Image (cartoon, rainbow, N blue to C red; front, side, top):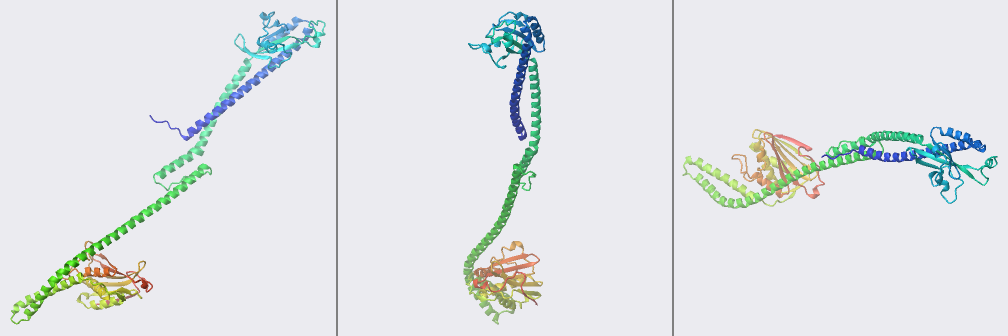
Amino acid sequence: MPILRLSLIAKLAISTSLVLLALMALFAYINIETLQKIFLDEAISDVENLSESIIKTTHHQMLDDDRMRANQMIQEMGTQSGVESIRLINKDGRIIYSTNDDEIGTFVDKKAAACNVCHAGATPLIQASSMNRSRFFTNAKGKKVLGLAKAIYNEESCYTAECHFHPENFRVLGVLDVVVSLDKVIAITNSYRYKFTSLTFFLLLLIWISITLCTQALVSRPVKQLLKHTNLVARGELTSKVLTSSSDELGELAAAFNAMTVSLKKARDELEDWGRNLEVKVDERTQQLKQIQDQLIRSEKLASLGELVAGIAHEINNPLTGILVFSSLVGDDPRLNPELKDDLEKIRRETQRCAKIVRGLLDFAHESLPHKIPTQINDLIDATLDLVTHQSSFHDITVVRSYQDALPQALVDPNQIEQVLVNMMVNASHAMANGGTLSISTGVTSGDSNLFICIRDTGCGIPEGNLGKIFDPFFTTKENLGTGLGLAVSYGIIESHGGKIEVQSTVGEGTAFTIRLPLPSDGETVGGTSDENGGERSASVAL
């Protein structure tokens, strides 16, 4: 069974209506009671005036002892609308006249309501107020009536009259008791009660409608906007805004919500930026760790291979020397059949090739510590180019030099760095079998103060799957042209200098090797900076 949910407007309307209903009911009760008291006081006053009129009207008839005329006048007074009964009671309590003939001659009980006011004590009262002399009761017909007893005093005109029946020392001659109906007062009171009750409910309904409309406009609608905005914020839509045009507490609350939303959006954007930056940094650090791991693996592999090939090279070198010596001797022997000279020359040539491989293995296995001296890299590159460009593989290759002027001197072993440069340049020439451009640039990178040498060719390029293997010993893509040790030895030399080699290649477009060498601390103030693709001095040589 669903739980009944009252809206804010309903709660405010119901609570306000209940408070108003209680207050208006209390007000109506007090108002009606006050009005009823006023009506009763007015009725008592009317009866008082009626009694006074009867007494004054019958005064002369009483002085003349004309009882018949007095009775007729009282009878006529009794026929007025609303008058239930009029009776005269003497000082002994005997009813000497009444509009009800059955009461004439009877005695009234002095303890009755009509006499109780004056005769309640041991001594009868001479004077009493109109309110104390009035009484409200229900007559034999079941009607609510008002009774008023008014004393008839022994005035001077009474005890000096010719008929002076009463002596002068009598203060009260009798009582005039008048009973009137309260139907008119009750009808007016009931009518006022009905009208006031109807007006109260009408005003209550009008107030309820007004409160509902005002609450809807001033409270419910802004609260619904805040609730909608809160739901949007909970769903992560931080671009929404609460529209407000008031400057009250709800307006301030809406402004606070908008400010909170802006702060949340700013914080979320900062977190997203931080997350993206963190992802980038994690990726960068992962790549760095991978590169370091690859370098460690390569270093361990090189170290292990170095120990292995050192022993193998020594064991193979002696037999190879013997084969080379005896093949040379046999080749010079005139007794040798001329038809065998070509085969013997092939043996000698292949033996020399094996010896060259052994020397490469020894160079790889016995990496010597670099003897570092301050060296001008630009001059070292020029010297290396002069050495290699005379080879046949450099025909149809254009060399472009892009050096940074006033390049700081590097603390390196010139011989070892020259060996690295020779390997790089010769490999580039082999990659450009049909000609091309060899670009060599130098400079200092900003930020890490490293000197770089970039050797870029426009050759066939290296497949992506081989980029991670090119520094491994004995890995080569040249058929019968290399041992696969040149780049491995070059990598070891640069690593022993505290530098690193980077390679970028695209198949069909070319390859770029970048050698980075650290500068000495006192060299940071020498020379300028440049990028890897240009400098302040360039030259083009066609070979």
